[in-house]
Image 1 (spheres, one colour):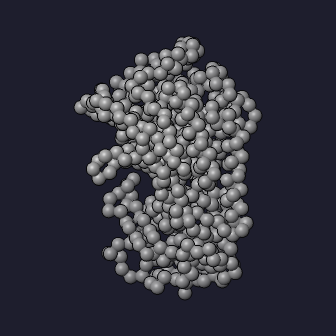
Image 2 (tube, rainbow, N blue to C red):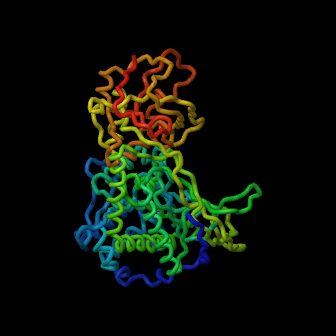
Image 3 (cartoon, rainbow, N blue to C red):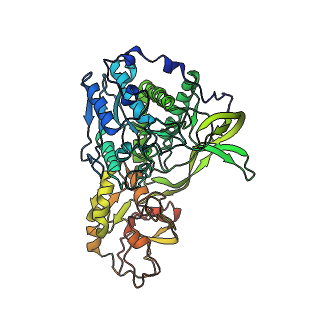
Length: 561
C-alpha cells in the first residue's frame, strides 16, 4: 500500500469524554434495568448471573430481545457454566447480521459491561438507523468459567473495580482466543455453531490491550487471516479507517492494534501489528466471508472510561455497517463468487503464509509513564510525537495451486469429522473422491516439533511437497482401495474450501496437523522403530505439487502396494 502521511495528533490519554457526561436521560431513568456496575458505582464488574438478570429485565421492555442458542451448540462450558447469548431482532427488513463477542479473556471486562448499555440504548430507540439495519447476537460472558472467578489479584496492572476481574484463560488453561481452528473448548464449538446458524456478516471481539504506552483509547484490527479474500479484507480495513476518522472528530484517538518496533539500540523505529492467524476470533471471520474486528481498550484508562470507550466505538462500528449494509452484502457475495470462479478454470490458489507490510506513515504520541508498584499509570513524565512507519497490514506470500481435496485416513475419521463439520465444511465418503485425479503423497523436507507446549500442545510445523510418488520408506499399513473408499473426503471446491485447505494441509501454520490432531504420525520420536503407519492425509490432484500450476487431470489413481 502506498505510504500516506497522516498529521492527525493523538490526544491525551487521561481525559474523560464529553459524551460520557452527557449520557442519555433514558439511561439514567431507573425504570430501565441497571447493570451491576451502575448500581454499585463501578465497584464490581458483572457476573454471568448479573448479565442474565439484566437481560431478562430488558426483555420485558422489548420482546425482540430473546435468549439465543445456536442449533447443535453446547449450552454450557465443560464445568457447567451457562453460555448465555442474546439476539436482538432488527426493526427493518433483510438486516445485516452482526455477532459481538465479549469476555473471552475474563480479565478484560469492559466489553462485557458495555454491551449491556448498548443493548439498552438500542431498545430505548437511541440509534434507530442501527436498529433498523442490524440484527445482533452477543455473548457478553464468553469465557463463562473466568467471568465468575473474579479476584482483585488478577490483572493488577490495569485500574480495576474493587471486586477484581477474572483470569485470562478458561478453567483448563486454554486461551479461548487461540482455539478457533482446533476447537478444543465447548465455547469454541458454540461459536462455530453460531456461524452455521446465525451466519454473521461481521464479528466483533472485545478485549483490553497490554503492551505499549501509546495513548490510543481504542486500538483495532481487521480480519487478516492467511488466505482470506483480498477485496473483502480491503473493505474490512476501509471500515476501520472510516471509523477512525469519525472517532477522532469525537475526540477519541484510535489506531490499528500493535506495539512499537525497536531497533538493536532500543530506539523506536516503527509500529507493527501482531497476528494473521485464523485461530484468533477476530481473524477467523474472513475464512467465513465475514468482516472481523478486534477491539482493544487501552488498559491504563479507568474501568469506567474503558466501558464508555467500548460503547462509543462499537456504536460507531454498527453505524458504519448500517450505512454500508448493501455494499457489505455485495462484497460478501462477490468474494464467494471469486472463489467459485477459480474452480471453473481449475486454478484455485491460496498462500501458505503472510508477511507484515507497510500500510502508511502516522503520527504517534509516545508516552513515558510513571507507574505504581502494580504497573498502573499514575502520571506521565512526557509525551513525544513521532512520525512512524506503520506495519499494520499483511501480504500473501508462497501462493500455490490447491488440490481438489483431501482424503483423511478412516482411522482418524471419527476424530476429525466432527471438527470439520463444526466449521461448516462438507465432508463426503472417500468413495466420492474424483477417480480421474492422481493420489498425492506428502514428502516432508522439515519437521519441527515444539520443545515447549502452546495451549497444552507440542505443536508441529511441517514443510514439504505433494508428489505422486509414494515415499521411499515403506508404510506398515497400505492405502488399499478399500481404505480409500472408507476414508473421508473433503473437497476444496466448496464455499468454505479456503478454510478446508488451512485445516487439512500439513504445511498450514494453524491446521489440525499443527495442533497435534495427527501427532501419532507426525510426531513419531526416536523411540518408535519399525515401519511407520500410512500417511493419514492424502491430497487429490497433482496441481498441489511443488508450487506448480500443471494440471493432473486424467492421470490415474495410484494405490500404495
